[in-house]
Length: 156
Image (tube, rainbow, N blue to C red; front, top):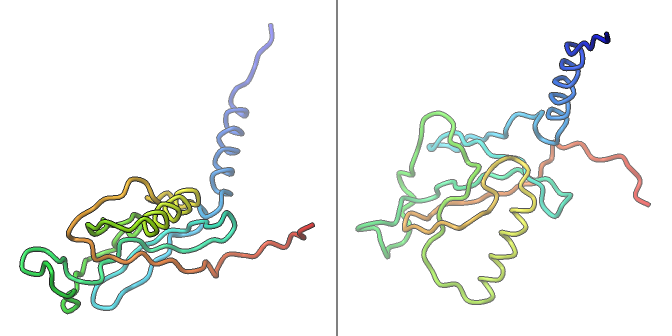
């Protein structure tokens, strides 16, 4: 009779799975955060763009009061900006304003969303179906990931 021990094998499999998850790009790092004066702290995400360039993305940050009711069809009100307690999750895109883009803008938006969707690396809403709403005065901010170590491989 042959006895098969599953204990060490199962432990090794779990350890290998855990290490592979930790070695995946970006998972070993804390999410990026930044504090906006008079508003609060936002948490962004790491993304890949153009297949190689990594960026830090902060999505859906309010920059003015919602243009609804009596504020509709008026310039944006930037006094007394929305604020929050704790850390705001800025990893998904906020709704777009209602408008009918010209064909050139429509194509540009389509290409940009394809680029974002293909490079989503941080588990956020890197694209997907667009949402529309009157409350649409939000910024999506992308900055280079300067803390990322550069590759030392030669390109042949």
